[in-house]
Length: 258
Length: 320
Image (cartoon, rainbow over all chains, first blue to last red; front, top):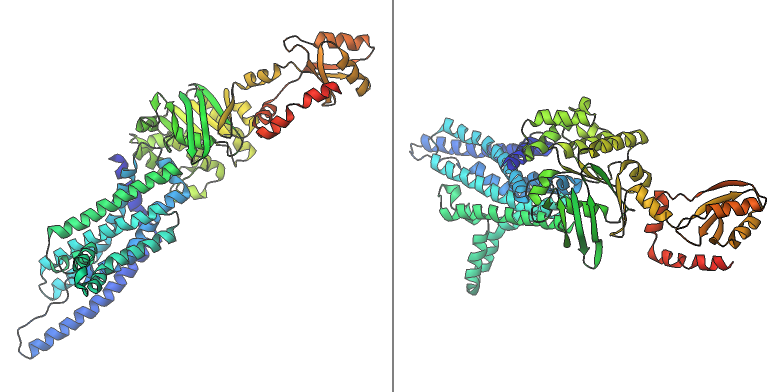
């Protein structure tokens, strides 16, 4: 336990000294900020015009805008935050010392994962400011926002865990980043692939399987709209556990073959 | 205490370490000597639990390295060959990180203590990337000492250091050897001779000799060869010495004559001295042919083909 905590503390504080982590935060907030402002001013203008015409209907701004955009951006955020995590330890050889300390691979990898997930959580919490802005101009639905943020948090955890697998596979950070981005994009686009499969009736069940395998099937239609389903939470949690298990095994076998 | 029994590491058909057995005793520095690629690092990685052996057994501090890896790791300090460190951390920060993973209480005090021990206390707050190679080596050593290990495994700790740093590090290792079991690998022979109480020579994954440096020397001296220098024409002296009954073979070498006795257990020197004086020559030098570790090492680590070719040579020389 103390080993997990030690690894976690080092890695987590490292994010606040790493230029890449700041660059990711900056780019993400800039991107989200521009889109959020556009979206907000549009809906305000619309509501004003409706009110002027004596209408009572009020459209809300997209409550899940920030979390939904973050899940889209995960194919960049995930690789950038995780590529260093294990690849650098192998390349620099620092893993050799760590793996002769009384600590097993699982502790080491859980500590690393919790660090990157926590940093991601900080990023996510920064975007809560958008929701606070919404509360200044109206009464946003807190349930939808909560569901969307919970979803984005779990979604992020699953993506980060999947990206860690590639960081364990290769010593090259760039290769790890590329393979991670590709994997996350495939998981993101599984829904699109499923749609093309449904055109053939014989492949309907296969289409459904592919759809359920993808990330968005468990976020876009449900959590993003405040619908919290156990199966979606189970999907993200299982993705995390599975990916971390595979990562642990890879680190183990790499060492054994080294 | 390190006890290694028939330790083997195979990669496919290639044996990196082949049936290695040796013992490193507490309170001693055991040298692990061999040319590059002999299997030193692989053996050390198996002893530290970094890598499992293909077969065989090793006990470190009384625990099996494979079955009780965590117990071994708690009792071993390991300095890997290239001294991997986190360059963005300070020396103190790095030691505290290692201490935290190891669950050491008062790790700040302990880290300062070991930095003092490796004479790096004044650079405790420096980032590791700003330290010189020798200082990094000492940070690595400090890391290995954080938990007062029973056993220290140091993989070529003097490589890449300047001569002064090498001397300092050797002193430190010798000092540590007094109350630890130290296994110290090197490919520099003079270093093993100076630092180690006992030496294991490994080549192509196999142990080719072991014992104290002086024991190894006397094994090779047992042939009883002596070195003779005489104030006489070299050829005449050689021919005369060759004709003595106590001499099996005489050959020119080292600016004199090297004589192999007919009976390896009898000292041929009195007979040689008498013969030379009787011949009216002056005896300038007559001593057992000292063999240093360097010669032993070259002898033992020569490629087997070359050694096989070298074997029959003396026979033909006897005839000449």
